[in-house]
Length: 88
Image (tube, rainbow, N blue to C red):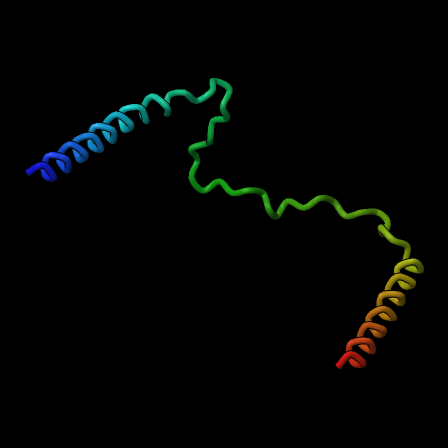
């Protein structure tokens, strides 16, 4: 009989705690800041992903410098391939 009373007391305490916390949630939702950003309610409005910036007038890297960099990268790749082959 004593175990049944303990179980009922614990269940009652948990239930009352759940109701108390549930009542606070509506008050917490009202605490949004006044300067919070309002989300638009327009369905179907997508980001402008196809609006690209204008093309540049000149290349970022001059062609001769680009060729030099590509040659250095190819040489490094070849050295790594030889090193990997020797490690096997």
